[in-house]
Length: 95
Image (cartoon, rainbow, N blue to C red; front, side, top):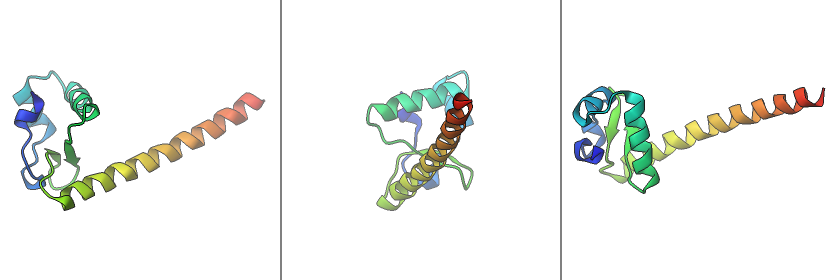
């Protein structure tokens, strides 16, 4: 299982490339789909983009709060992009 290879703590995060190699997935995209499935099942698998990036199981409240903040910010940016696209679609369909 993927979680067998994901370390505890942000300082020990494992890169996507290393996790693909260890788990036997064929690509980063396949690995990400597997992680998304686990997250949907309730597993907390955090990731970070700085300091080398990678996946980890949060060890502290601070690590978890940082991950939550990152995901919330991404979601807000995605929602804004979606809203702009929908407004443009509405305008195009009115013509």
